[in-house]
Length: 241
Image 1 (cartoon, rainbow, N blue to C red):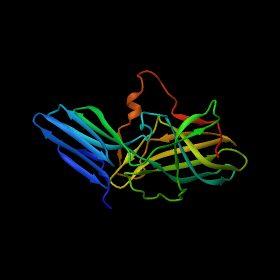
Image 2: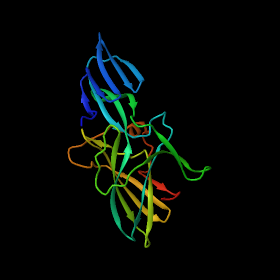
Image 3: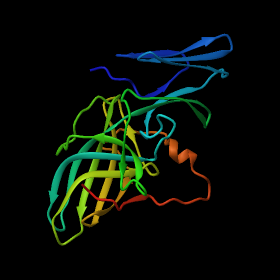
Image 4: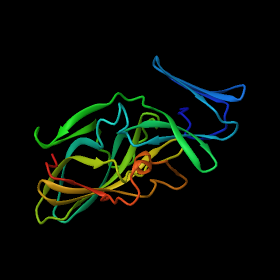
């Protein structure tokens, strides 16, 4: 299967995949960018003589207009014995960013997704948080979804309690998401530490799922304020099922 090719390009190229067409073309001293995704069109004029185009997957929390900074993945319930750690695999929706780069300076000119976003509420109506919602099959081995649609989360479930616990969802915050990609796979690695029947901490690990993968440019990392530290974990206080 020929997938959308993530990576680096020169200033003149076109990519076509299913309902997506994406092109960069010269127009005198300017560069024109055009994108058509199922009839939704974007055009940009770029004043740059030479540089690099980077296309990579980014945090799936930008469309439309950064509604939320939380990603919720629901899955088939799993029962975890006391003190056990188990590794499972889940899918997550992909958003794709297009960057132009000159020397070490880069700018995002477009974000698109071939997956229609869905939303949910984690917690009660008066104090819960809106989440980007995705239901995933629970995999015991890494699946192979179309990387222009879905990525794979390698998730370590750690039950630190003395009793059994049931888990059927995980919630992540955008900050700290580490996405890696190659031509056939988009991945994240994460852990979920369960400390009570209804409470857990979630965090990302900065590592690829396999050797040779490239690290994506992190949109949320570039938006943080210098000198302002944020915790690199999220505390799930509103239940695990």
